[in-house]
Image (cartoon, rainbow, N blue to C red; front, side):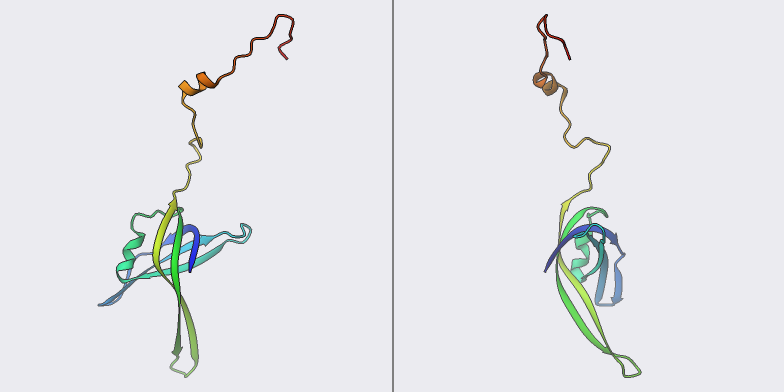
Length: 126
């Protein structure tokens, strides 16, 4: 499965056992901007490094599998757990700096593109 959203939180890597490590992260999915969803994913083993270099607030695409487990408590109650196991991350875009215009026009182009209005003597300028 694949989902696209904004990287919201990156947690530190956790060493679970001598041979197993995991790293969790949260993606904000805004299919409906009124009700954003915060989805927790996990990377394991060598995939933990896939978050390196990706900044919080960047748009990413996550390819993942759904994993489910059954666990019996010491009291004999059966519980079920789900994990979204990410296996590929793709950075789509960095957040835009609002202080920088979206597409600044160089001064040289402004001069060439400017239309100069020269009214006739009998025309009013407004």
